[in-house]
Image 1 (cartoon, rainbow, N blue to C red):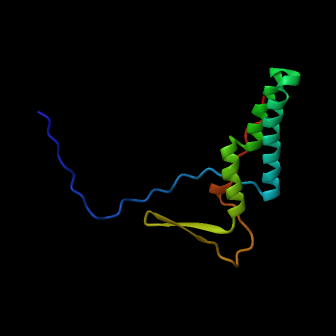
Image 2 (tube, rainbow, N blue to C red; image 1 turned 90 degrees about the vertical axis):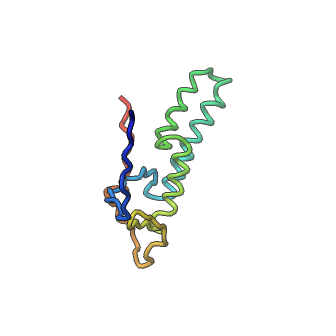
Length: 125
């Protein structure tokens, strides 16, 4: 016979664990991020457009776009939004509830914290 014991619920808040660092796809500046996008989209378009002239070997250039994008094109788009909003928005979390507010206007520069550092991809071997 299976028996189930119900757990007694309390209204005390659970211990809040620190949130895992969020992925950061932002660049140091918007022009730098746009340059990465131009290179990435150029590599994809060029590798597809050159197939009739040079054959399927040109498709080998497409994976290089992933390096320029730091992932997929969606990662690049998320990074563009992060780069544009960097320093303008501030996320604060308290009691398990996170809110997004405008950053302090007196703060003029963005100081990276350990959870906002960007990890570059490993170089190809």
